[in-house]
Image 1 (cartoon, rainbow, N blue to C red):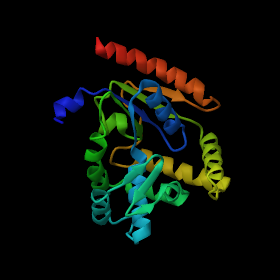
Image 2 (cartoon, rainbow, N blue to C red):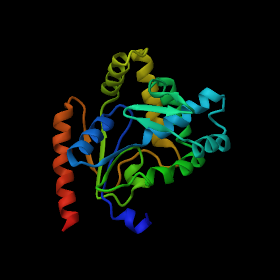
Image 3 (tube, rainbow, N blue to C red):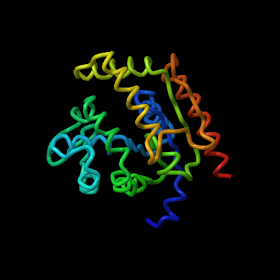
Image 4 (cartoon, rainbow, N blue to C red):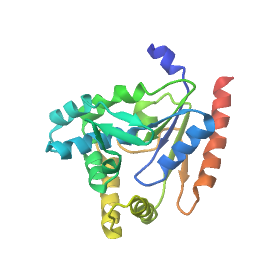
Length: 229
């Protein structure tokens, strides 16, 4: 498909820091709108996992970019396969999330993954979840949303997610790691975490997912209708 054809496909972007609820919101919007869903963070988790698994240094930009270029994931429902191994559970481990944040700060890795993310744009539309979806990957998105929540709230959410998945979790460690990740994501030179110009900003602290989805969905439908006129 040509670039001009791709650019005619509507995109909704949902950006925000770790455990802010962007994944839940993006999935809800995709289901309600009948759009495809892109979890961009999953690509960085794959690179982080491959680096840890193969012993590649998280500061070796050239080697990490090669790993990113060579990614050949296979998706089977919610299961993710890499190198003939089912890695869905491994990708959600905190260690992999930290590695993902570190490799995401590298220009070579981001450049290697940019094309793959943009090619996820398919009719009838795409909801893209990440940290730079509205600022870098899809700057022409018709609807941009940026969500956040307090650090303690996000640590509690991540703790609950990990426990429910049967993974080890420690609240004090999570608080420290989320704070460090926020600083790393917002302070990096390449595609820093920030709200896109004109984005709807939603603080999800102490708000339940259905209420956040209702607000975001009303906004998106209004924007999509205006764009179609």
